Length: 108
Image (cartoon, one colour):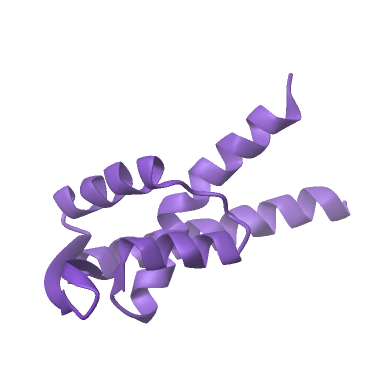
């Protein structure tokens, strides 16, 4: 078993949650999302992000609006919907439960 494969799967499993957390703070352009994820040391490329944003939008968790840009064409800014906020709350509860479980196992 390769540790890199396991780490990659762990990152993939938390990516949706991290994107929703970012968008809870404010609407964001896709390249801004990538930059914030990279600043947090969660390695993401456009080829991974765009299908995920589309899936979240098609599930009703995100919406977007076009905003004029001073540096080129209009940009698509993503934001959480009400349904997305509820989904994020579910993920937050699951995350808390998971971290409690892991900490229990580590400390006992």
